Length: 475
Image (cartoon, rainbow, N blue to C red; front, top):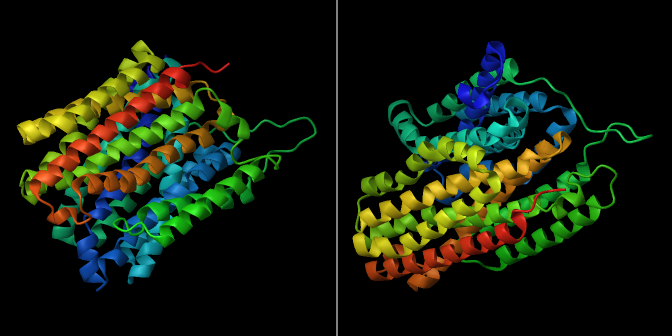
């Protein structure tokens, strides 16, 4: 980590290393808190005598809070000071984790998880924004790769850590761990992160920019409606889903109209016309949609088509996060050495090869074919992420790092949410039944082939965006 910082003095080296460590821990915690709660759902259903759809809100409340508020908290960090807000977000995350651990009822647990999600939104939005203030510009890719690695480790480590804690200490212990680590991250952030405060430029005759409350409310409601549309009744996309999508579309229109009228908008309309940012957000969403297919389709294929036990399915699914953790920093260093723009295309090309491999190899070589395909796909994803984040953040004005970082994280989250619904629907259509769990092995294998052929096509679209628009340098 110290070589990523590579500052000129020993004291600066310790400070930069500490800053990267605190940012890495914040990124790790935000990912860990998603996956560690998933494994607790059956236990929570028994503990609170609640239905499975009810306890699913323990996960959904966390994800909705992040999705709805991540851009707004990024903008707030630009206005009030990023270190101040990140420390506050870590404090909220820790307090909400403790409240979740002590929650006597399911509704209170869900409310605590929503508050925890707000803290996590701050953590996700501002960790990427802080990179420009903690490492030299020529090592931005390495830092982005490190953060990607920590996110992958958190996602991969959550289920196993959660299972051990629940078995030995009970479900409350998974939230106590979050609270403890959150306090450690908060203390590290206070100690090591640069204390730069709000730097919003003041125009002639104008005071400090105000926070866009109306835009925040409109965007939060719009994103929440979209997320709910994609998650409610995944096996039956009905009238409620359509109504929520309509509400999201209306909200998006109102948000864009409002942003064009206020003096200090949440998202400046000019950002949507940026020749680097706009294509990067689109590519990020497409790539995340594709990656979600491995989590949605992979378990069904491994269990139904290949007949693996639950334990073996879990072991095979862990290959992706493990490879991601191993190659994240390496991908970042490659980006620093060879440049972000060309590595975006190289990463996407590797992903196309990986998707084609997932469409073909598992049906021929079984588990070995699946593993090889994942080993091809995952490094491409990590390379794309490091290069894309670096390309966006490298030349962003310091006054907009928070909101742009939030937009990057939002595009990823929206891609994951969309991928759950869309790629799941493609898979079910290809299998030929909505009851995929009871489908014949041959039908599931056919669904796997079609789904990842479609996924390869989506990545090709992302490559087209990269080559047409995403490689242009901002003026």
